[in-house]
Length: 166
Image (tube, rainbow, N blue to C red; front, side):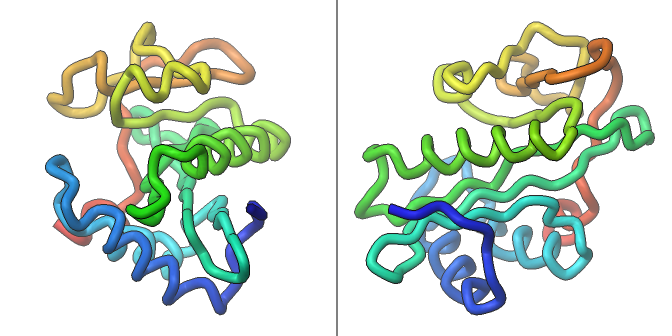
């Protein structure tokens, strides 16, 4: 498996993969593919990595900037993460997330937030022990990881690409 930045020829396979990966997910709004496209079109897809095996895109992870109390403090949101259903639970998503976080840190990101399963994201250094909020989401599902600077506090807002799809 190779993990690399997306290229223009990956756009259609990423959309198809994302739709397939979230098709039967109970927590999905079925908008994840459109969200990735909206982020890309807005120039807000800060980091977009694909996992490729034998020339086929089998996984994808997206990172985009977030605002905290309306300001841009150098923080990013992780997601969506998509893996081909036939290959889920075999390490592809883990490898994509870990590589994406390494690259974000090297790019000088101050931190990252994620909305998801605490058991999964704890492995990557995310915690719910922070003063960040995301609407009325229960705090243990909204997690953060800080690389530099003082811990931040406030209300997190994802890029408009997430909102335009609702």
